[in-house]
Image (cartoon, rainbow, N blue to C red; front, side, top):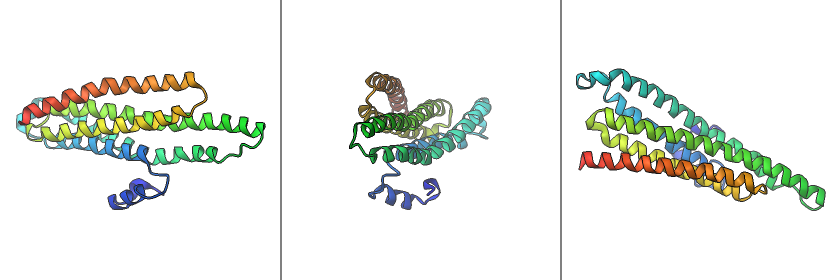
Length: 209
């Protein structure tokens, strides 16, 4: 099933069902794509306007990057669902004998690492989305600055949400050293981009109130 080809109504229906996918990761990627799209909307409302002629070239460059980011995040909706399959299979492996238990641990570790890789991609893309929305807020049309702020907020929410998929998977890892390295990596991104998103939000709020 290609989730990104479904209607919004169908996606939400499946998301609310007992099906394991799409889940929080896919939803996060979709929200991040919406955030990047809002940034691009600001660019669309800016480009071609005489008032913003001096930043025209830069705005167009930002729009091209935002468009690519939208596509990549939509692709991650599907990729996140596909990455869950090996983990689901690992959980179902037998563990009656010591040999089966050892085999399950090995397979689980590999599956858990793979299950963390997509949420990290989502976090990284959403981090760039926050950066882009910040630039659109600063250089784009003042009439659409609220949309740039909304885009940054959506990317930040998506980044936070994707991190939860990392933490729940690292908690199940037997290799605690690796797990803590991954946790620390996620922690750093949350700290850095939480501050950036807050600055953008405050700047936008000050401009519109």
